[in-house]
Image 1 (cartoon, rainbow, N blue to C red):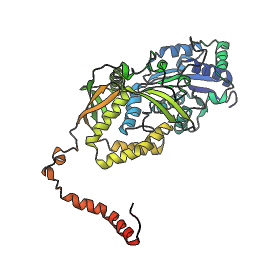
Image 2: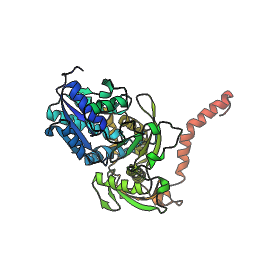
Image 3: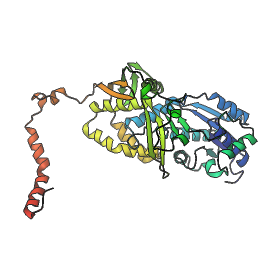
Image 4: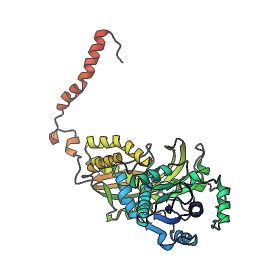
Length: 416
């Protein structure tokens, strides 16, 4: 992309060193007007400095956008994902993946608002996020130009970036001169830690990660020796209350985060398969999401029909893969979401859970829409179930097996 091809670009801007370098690089290399967009997704950081830094680097006040997206994030992205009981590769609650389509969507909305012809992100050329951002951009604005500095600039490493920052008067916080021992991505759903200190999967996650000042949850060893019992209420598949108190989605997740953090819940040491072709090791902290996953699964256990529940379980890995791979704004994700949401009409009620030393233990579940019948599961004949009926069911299901066995006997084939 030649200098001058872009007139105005919307940059996903955190206010940190890397995106500040990107901001200056855009101004210098592309000679374009830069609009900064900073999303508050509940990452727990003060976002005011992002505005001050952007102003100090020559961004006009009307070109600085700092948006509180916490409620939208949980209501329109996290909750729909949890209706599917989504796990990637059986463990990962997709805390980073699910945030990217929302950031991208708001970036495109701002680009349309200010008549920008390009958008820019700070994801590296090795990671998943570049794909998630750019697939979302193109799905929402097919003719948009995308600037990905890590795939374009000539910087070879951290020393080059630091030298560029010093050359242009970009403030460098203490300890930022060298590569950080690990990097952190955070939002209201989770915190992920990756890089250097975590790169050898043979080693335990070091204390500088699990016991850092801004960690999301304590370790199970640090958690109280006394369990705590809580209740989570659901309406049509979404959590609506904690301990009987109705809460807006983002406040509900924040409360579950608080409770989970106290009891050491949600830490996960994971080696995942990136879709760019490599394996990546990280440490994820998702205290509230872990509680929510167990609670939702428990309320579904008494309100979902067996066939619907099993079909959801079959669809879930495909759905998880779509989110992980950046395919939120695709026809197939919308189709799967429609099927998942259709299953949730009767998923209402209350789940009681015990939190203890990193564990989430279901203690009970109730629902006005329950399909569970105590009369049917008892050992007597109450409830309209005739035990003798099982014989016909068994024989019909065994018929094809008996036919095969008769054939094998006839032709002299050994039985398995």
